[in-house]
Length: 408
Image (cartoon, rainbow, N blue to C red; front, side, top):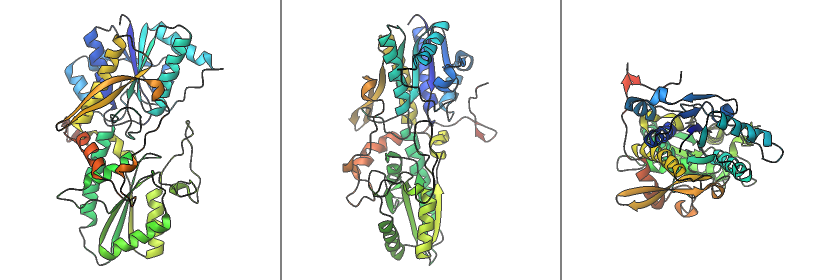
């Protein structure tokens, strides 16, 4: 690459998305790229020509190491949907005008399904109009729902947080041993794919009995059966802890959280999910008189860099790094995938894959990894997920709290 590059972040942040930016920066510096820009608030900010020079923050090893330990999106994220090309050519021309203005020959975009669609459309426009600029996707999503790749950077750290927090909740909920059972319902992110909620299965071990039930959106949710199951558990145990995906839905397709109320919709047409645990806890309390508690992890599960998986951090760095190396080879319109090639010990490499097979495709938890009763996960899932949560990276503590890299 003889010109400059730019990297952006989009969609919901993860605990390791900044590690991918560090990977892009490290690879580009190694190749001698002149300027490495960062979009401020993704493609939306880029269209307003808002960028920073990353060398101002990452010009030494300390900056990169601090960035790896910083949660959320250091560059700023967005949920901006690029319009369809036809009839909106002016928007796409604006992207190329800005790239030409700053001598940017390659754009790297870290994100999930919708972000990969942005990469696809920009690369398609470039191909159709004989433009030389290249576009590469860097996978990111705690939802773990991108196809082709074995898993997504961000998922391992969110899974580690979920499993750890559930172990702590299980201990807390069982501490009193009251005669009247306490039912704790924990709501975990996941609209249509239950990968995050599945991570609740990783709480089980020789020091923890694990969750009493785990409900994923891949299976239809029967509220009456759920109440009956809780009653049965309460007859046997004084402490019941249940993990439920925010996106569980009943037979007619309605999400449990939208029953009896309206829910907001975002720029991509996605319903804003929240309130599933509260609704179910209230239902249990009303019908059984049992003591209930609802806990919603919400953004905590994607922001906990202090508990990030070292495997996840390293792989997030690697996909950023390898996206640059692929672009150096002249590749465009592709996303870097993680390819598992060893189990004992766990090993994972990368490849560059056609973005057209990835954008707008949602991968769900395989049926064979969900137990026959629809209330748990099999050993197959644990074998898949356990390596992704391994290892830790100690935060850099200052005055008792972790130090973060903050954009000026």
